[in-house]
Length: 322
Image (cartoon, rainbow, N blue to C red):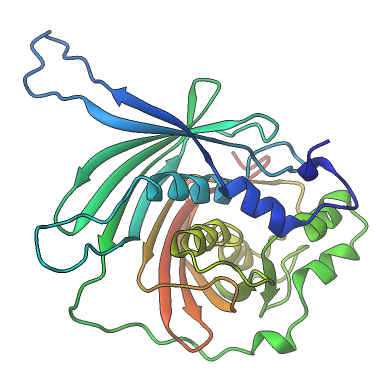
């Protein structure tokens, strides 16, 4: 039996690292045929194919943050330092932004493949498009851009003053005491430690502000691999970004009417991050309408450094309200 299927030996952090360690299957050619047969304005492009598995999930559907992180790993493994002819050593290129759509749910019990299109390697930027594919269907399509470090203007939004994580109770301790299989499975399998500053959003509550703050980290030292830390930051960014919408309307995750789903996801990586140290994730929702809600988040290192900005729109429907 594979380690990720075992009970007592299951380690969620080991499982996440294994899920992100994609295997490269080889190269392919991405071809767009001209409808006229001439094809002068269309060109073939080089592609790379990676394969990976999913984390076990109680509902059997692939977690969207996992697909985000795997797409980032696949794209990042095709980006190499570019020699521009200067005397200096070529510089590594870090992820700086990604914009994608969740198109279909995936089956967590079946493998995923990631088709990476090498769109462009310029003097300072590299662009990649990734399709996450399962059973010949695209689950997610996302474009990413990587940039080598450069000098320039520098400013950032300040980190809000919130309680430190050491004085907050871990989410997993709260969830483990709830007599529900999904809550207990989440407590046992979630690899990222979360600590909500506001009370954990479980059941109905009075409508309140459409904002919240959550501390997060991997509670283990990780390798000095910038791509890995960026991927796990993207993974964690999908956890609770829709919660400010629910808080605004007094709705808890346990509401049986709730039908949430991520629709799209954008992320800008401002500065290098370490996810094995505390990260503050502040979130707000400027709007909800038409069964959709928008979440905006900022991720800070504990010293106040702004690491990333996140935007996601999700479907937030209540059964019987359509």
